Length: 328
View 1 (cartoon, helix red, strand yellow):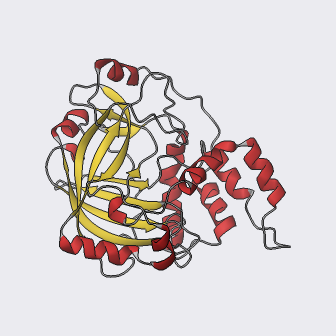
View 2: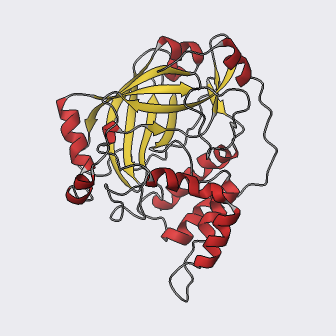
View 3: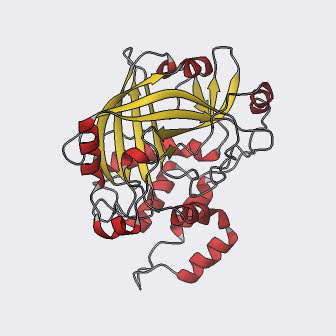
């Protein structure tokens, strides 16, 4: 059941200490770590390389307009460019029946030309607590040139010292794969600051919840549907009418960790629906207008700005580096 914010919860979100400063890898170092495992990034993005473009629109609810002064939440219809993706080593190796993440990336563009972009995944937590651990986790999995395989002992030692890197994988392993791009929730996983019409700044994470409900594959479907069914299923579904998602903000209570994206906040935390995303058309093939878009405009000041989650500081830059290498 969705609940509205209590005054105590709102006050708790404005009394958060800043995270201590840490030395962080550069965007180039992060992308280089990806390339060390996956090979050169030249034709597809390293995250969710198999993808399909769609279009639609977004309209904020009155609560969305109240909780953010960002142009996207004005209450007017905002055009959207949408990319649905599948995680994997490359577009050919990304299987629609794998217990991996699906992606929902969105570019919002108001009639006045204001742009906001985001990349969401079908898991409530990220795969690493900090950029440093993220890069180290990739580095330890780099294949040994002599054997063509990573050093399993080194991986085991790293995981033992950094158990948080296993949390997302464990969550995915516990869930059957999504039956449709349209029937899985997507989470932003990072916390952001939302400035409301009242001038108050609130910490929140968002998710996109499918209005058609959550559906997952049966064991029989995993065996029979094959690795490439999601795009056609989505096109057929949108052909019957728009696919809809509610954008929901979740607000922490005192003591919740707002700077570690590997820790989900408890489900009983206050939640408010702030908008409706409508998917109205899907491109007939892979790629399309989404391909040259990095989805790296992660804030829309002053209404939506970064929290102290250190992962955010390198996301936009690494997206830009990845895009520049793909467009060379």
